[in-house]
Image (cartoon, rainbow, N blue to C red; front, side):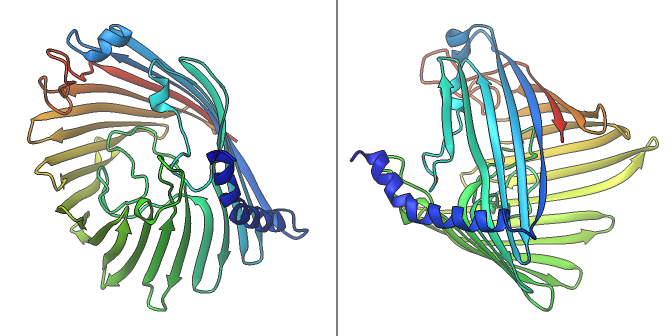
Length: 385
């Protein structure tokens, strides 16, 4: 029996139980249902400077394209619930292997390639698949789901499971992971959340504790202020975090401090931000500024303004800066509602900085060649149903 067959056998008992519970809930006579989804068509264009290593590989510019169909299904019966999200993806890219979704590290392999070429692929996958129980004070969910913790707006040191990159444009859905999640609600409004994320060693295919995450987070209130206390074992490292949210005048202040203790080092990350909303020239404006220390002597400052040009049109200039280099990425993001169910999302991305800097282009290891980019564009059309 080969490794993939052995892995499937190891998965089968837990997978069968989860599927059985989902089927009972979804097809019960008195269950309630919700169905929806979207299609998205996305094009990314990227240009490269003369000294870019990417220019040597693909030329002065490259274009990637992606099409997605996402089907979301939910069922509820009494206190039980079931949710699944199916994705059908068509991808085209000069760097396709680097952008291919895969479940090599996850407990379940819910991603299957339909066809694959050198620069194109069709695949389908389950991005959500969980069964849940909701009691008077307890919420339990088991299966593939998403989890977001912490108070960062651009950088997310307390978000231990699949945090978004600070320059990600489409953040509507976070990629799911296979986990058990528990939340207990206290009478005073505080709550305790726990999560156990199961991952495989990609070299062996075995589920290992040093690859997974086990975490507890307490969320409490102190007057009008909120606070979080995190204790976790993340990929074999001990993590302790403390966060808080408070109102300062008309603004909202947030902060997280996260300490990661490994055998060879202790890493301290700090993120703090301030956000405020106001009226400018009869337009709604929301501004945010954030500072982040990554624990490796690098300091970042990021900021954005979300300007409501009209009830249907939002413009968001964003700047993410590495203070040490210095270098930065400037993004002009626009979102326009074309109809009740159709939205356009676009962005122009401009890297700023000299060769050898993070955003200007890190060194590639090849003399006079850098991992650098020129101006890039992102365009996406989404239809919801």
